[in-house]
Image (tube, rainbow, N blue to C red):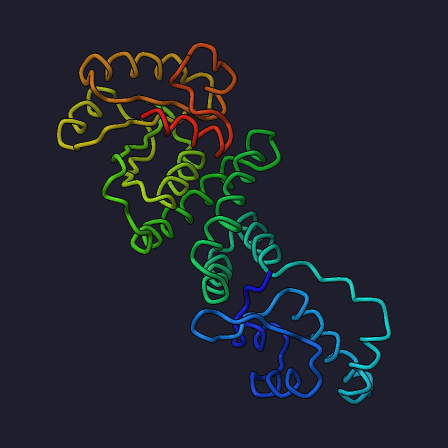
Length: 285
């Protein structure tokens, strides 16, 4: 699927835009599509073809000889997609607590891809992966907290770029009282904001009484709790009962690893474990 601008292709291949256009006209071995405004868009296959020609040039072939071989030889195997490389590099930087490199990779992602692609194909899967690794004991709580802190800082900037749909309800996202693990909640918040919801992210859990006071100042239709550790389930259930009694018109939902392990106790309040399940639950509010 065509998705790269000529500037991005030049960055990925080391071939300047003027040369790319010349090769395209003369040899016709790449066929970019066009946007409505006439700008070229290149596919992963186009990028790999250009890289292949560049490699053959280094081996001593002329461009025409390289392209002739390209037509005669089996199609080159595509390299790993650049968005996957960025996502894996970002994961590696976060696991090594390398904040500078992580910010650099995020900047490169936004300079290369659309905002929607970065959030959906890089950030969201990475957040889910880190959360899963922590649940399975493959990363420490320090890694999870570092990643959460990093993305929370970036999220505050990202949110300003996300269009808000004024016809969708305002949603508050907060951890269960006593719960400090925010990464699952952060993932849900980012997902909701992608689809235009006005989301207020309150982060780590705090006493239900303070939350109730805050709700009086926030005109929200829905409250979503996140609970990762089973030791906080009792606090969560107590908070849900208390908040519902104080705010009877508020729709309350809950998700997270601990909630999914005891989903039957939450009946219609359980959001589910996947974005598809979240969509189904959100359609009811």
